[in-house]
Amino acid sequence: MSNKSLTADFPQEHFTPREMMKMALCIAFCAVSAFISFPLPFTPGLVTALTIALTVTALVLPPRLVFITVASYLFLGAIGLPIYPGGVGGLGRLFGPTAGFYIGWPFVCAIVSMLKGSAINFRRYALVSVLAGVPLTYVGGVISMMLVLQIDLWQSLAMAVLPFIPGDILKALLAAFIGYRVNRALANR
Image (cartoon, rainbow, N blue to C red):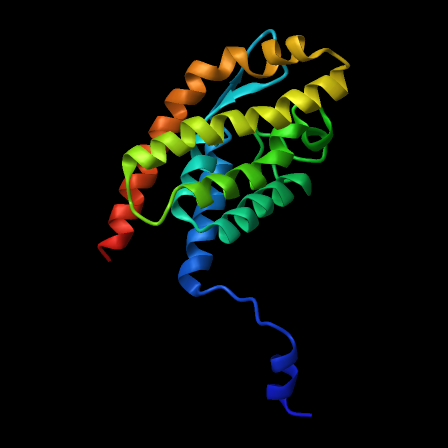
């Protein structure tokens, strides 16, 4: 049996070297940005620069690559690399009160990537990041806090959403600006 007949039966999923480089840089950006974080005294959630890196990733990569990249980042943290916010790693974050944020990130980032469109447009990036990325991220966090902490919806909103809204909007706008600049630079190459 020839090699050609084997490959005809199975689709070949591969990445170009350029795609792999962009994915690796996005994972590294996420890992480094997660170290810029601080706790709020009334919630298990952290204020973190990771959300900027995740949104930039969503804006510079196509949806399939975004999902794989963010899932890879989560996998690396789950196996113990200290790349989650606060400089921790392991499965604890994926089963704790903030687990919904982590589990939701690959999906939210892929949705943001789909909604950003093909044109390099700061306004669209900003709108998609603020109106889709921020609220969709909160959904997972609210659900996991309700389940793990056994609190009601209003308590969960007070802990996982309300204190973070102003900062998350600013971070989404900053990510839109960075994503716009990166995409412009890559388009000119």
